[in-house]
Amino acid sequence: MYEASVGLFVPYLRNLSGLLDKGVAHAEARKFDSAILLGMRLSPNMYDLAQQVGEACRHAVVAPALLAQREPVALPALEHDMAGLQARIATSIEFIESLPRAAIDAAAERDVTFRLKNGTELPFTGRSLLLTFSIPQFFFHVTTAYDLLRHAGVELVKKDFLGRK
Image (cartoon, rainbow, N blue to C red; front, side):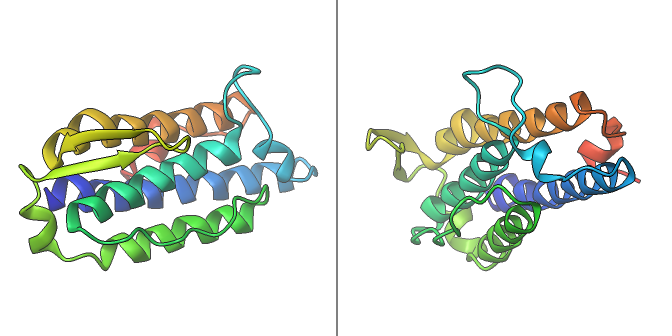
């Protein structure tokens, strides 16, 4: 359970940070404010890039916290600037790496409840939370962030997403 949560979220959060770095470099090379990228959307009713990053961090923090029976770290307010998003990613990584492996590994059959932003509570076992909800949510938001940056012309390849050199 630990490897499927912390062991998965941390490297992909680092990859997401790298994607944002490439977005900043792209903006600097083309002499525009990188904050413009953060407001981009694939569709008018979808989250923008900043919100995609925010949601990826939220799922990466909340799921392992629930598994470890800890309160999730309070992430900084979602800002539409690259430095703020990088700080959010760094805070997320630091928090989830601090969670106890044994508690997370013991959570597969434990009942956990995920609370949506609107207050709705969704019941899961630890395993079903991770495999059917949190990991898919996390990758949806990371993938959408990647796609938004690619759509903006940032030179990214699959290796940037996967983190393989």
